[in-house]
Length: 209
Image (tube, rainbow, N blue to C red):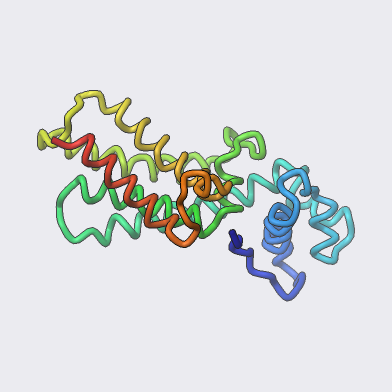
C-alpha cells in the first residue's frame, strides 16, 4: 500500500528550522520506521549542523512529540469538521461521522497515525496540546453517545464499555489496513476503506435499539 508522503520543503530558511525538522522526522519514519529517526539525522536532512536542532528539540522523544502534536491537531480538525457537516440532529449519525473520519484520516496519514498511537515514541504526559486535542476528539464521541442514551436509543446503559468498544474497533480496523492484514480476510486493497466503513456501520446496528 502506498503511504502518503510528508510534503518536502525546499530547504531550511531562517525561522522555519523547527518545521523542516518535523518534516524530516516524518520522512525518516516512512523510510525505515521509528528506529530510523534521530535528531542528528533530521539535521542532516535539513542541511544544518548537528547541533542546530537542539535549540528546538533536546532529544528524539522531543522531536517525535512535536510530530505527534502537529498530527493530532490535524486529526482533531478533520474529525471536528466531519461532525459539523452532519446535516441532522441524530446523535448516532454524529457518532458514525467520528468513526468514519477517524478511519479516513488514518489510512490517508499512516505514518502520522503510527506516531500518535505509539505512546513510547512520544512524551504524552508532557504535551498539553496532545492531551487537549485527544480529549477534544474523545469528547465528540462521548457527547454523541450521551445524547443517544438520553434519547433511549442505545441497547446498553454502560457508556464506558460502549465507548471503549467503539475506540477499539476503529483503532483495530485502522491498524489492520495500515499493516496490510486485510488480504488475509480476502479484502482487496481498493475495497479496504469501504469494508471498514461497512464494519463500522454493522457495529452501530449492534449498539442501537
